[in-house]
Length: 437
Image (cartoon, rainbow, N blue to C red; front, side, top):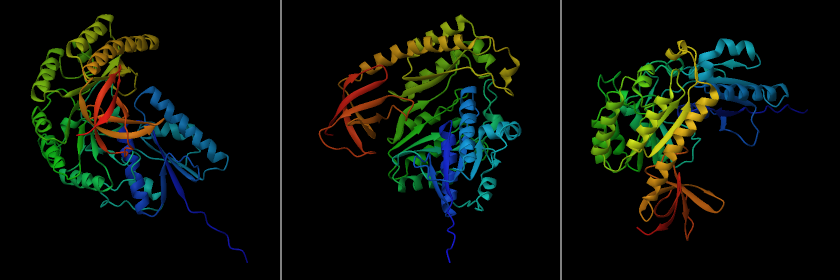
């Protein structure tokens, strides 16, 4: 008599949006694996039967990508290639009721803080003791370390508090344990992420505890680079910079989104800071940590933005010469403070302004990169493409910043640190060759 074989479930997690979403997906995968459920990220082999789409709901383009991805997975389910489609993340948190009506083929929807409920779909238990037990979706030599969830800020353009809730810090002890676990997995660089790094600790320690956390993380053996992302400029705690300066394994790098430089725009955006205060802060940062790489993010086309505001922003960039700049066009998001304002800058004009601003930064970046020719930098090897190695210096984060194209006489290991002497420089990338220490 023939017996019917039972196919074992295999879960594919598709992650959209930011690095914070990526960490959530990695934590989900760790929980599933601990419950002896087969799980993969972005499975190219297509041998899975269940999909979890971790969505982004930040701006229009991200929402559209998330919806299209859900629809694609539902289509595969209709063809019999998938058994289940689950959706989680920010878009699901924000628009669950509407999405349930529009895409009823999805088996279940979950918000950003409903991991235990998602696990129940797999008859899996949430294991609270799994601190840092993640299935990394990044190369094994670097990882993101999320130090808090949510945000208490009230920036007029931002929908994150609607989707992620209020600020909740993880404890220093748990974060150190997580970092130690990542190092055991082969991680050499961690990128600290949160909606707002500088707020860390206020809720559980009643003080800004990021300097304490940094010192504890810097003591973790085997952790060679620690990088800071998303620091809010208003009331910036300068004592953070003392730790950045004094600890060798904390990258001389700070990602501090400023969003604009015109006082009228900063006020309309509810950024709680003025241009002159930002100028003082930038000078203080560079004075405390000589040679630090400053990265910022800007918004073009916020309601009421005039050409004069755009010119002020260009002047600000030329005055302060940031090492790295990213720019978004404003997205009119319901539920935010700015939604009550008229979205009066046409999409094409938003794009034009963004291009103009980036042209200013492109020239600054080229000039700064030219200054690096002939200098030698500690560089981590990220990958090999077309026979060449690609790496980063401590002044560059993953995906968003410069890369170093490396010539080497002998094979290099991915995740290895080498000394690279820069021989050529372009707008946003460098070329160099490995030299002996």
